[in-house]
Image (cartoon, rainbow, N blue to C red; front, side):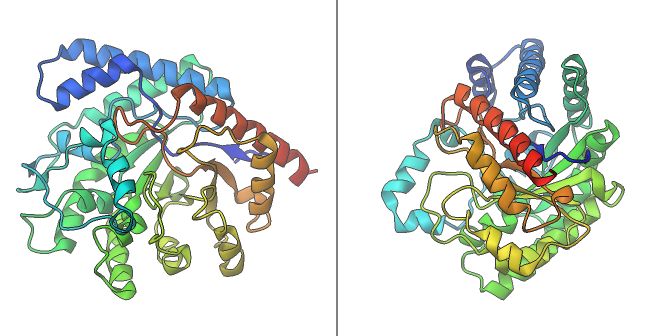
Length: 380
């Protein structure tokens, strides 16, 4: 990172234009779509979204996941072996506790459109050019905007196994390693384009109150340790400094009263190869955990990127609040190894209705301004 700067970034998904949402919903529903028109609109959307991030002052930008129907389920179109519907025998524990909250989550149009098939055959790469197309467009848009710090997010092996039930492989370990080897192609394509690869890892936290809720704490720790092993296998050819990972408890407006404490999992998370770890730090369920990490410590070889704004509210965080949060985190770790981000994505599924799309960029501008204020105070 540049000296005397607190870099700002976010976790991947940004609001898609309304016409692109309609096109992608049509594709998901099996309605014929002019593929050239779709690809053209994705390209122009990437140009627009990169420019808006740069204008907001964000340090490390991406393509907003414009080409993806969802941050994890997009892989079904790039890999073979997935079909039918995944029948996962789990519910989010917090939504079981509060059924009216569950209905609110389920009624969101973006979630209703989400499709998660099962693994029914061997997993192989069937669209090797998809990730390359993403990167060509991102690099082009960033160059046109005069910006060279870019990242691109990709589903981790563990989160794919979380959403897509295994009906083919003999064991969960065999399944997650098969995903890892297939996804390696995408990770390496991102890295070869000069971007930082972000691995999205909700399995390491959200999995505790969903798919793996019946496990004991030690069983869950063993599960995510396997997922980390698979992740490390998949990124073995990419330098640690070109990798980051997003730890997530689930981006939905639920009570989150069953979220696993970060203290139960962070030692395993530190074992992942990515140098930078992004995690929730702004929402009411996790804003206190700066004190937990202050007590446990952050390894000297890691960069942390806590969320200092959150994606579920139209409230625009004041730059002074952002600065105060960043300053607090600068007491937890060396500020030279600190970035500031967002708790999660703003549009994790195409067409999801969370907040006003224009507010998103006002929030990102406040994030960037707060980082500038904090850096002047921290490094003065």
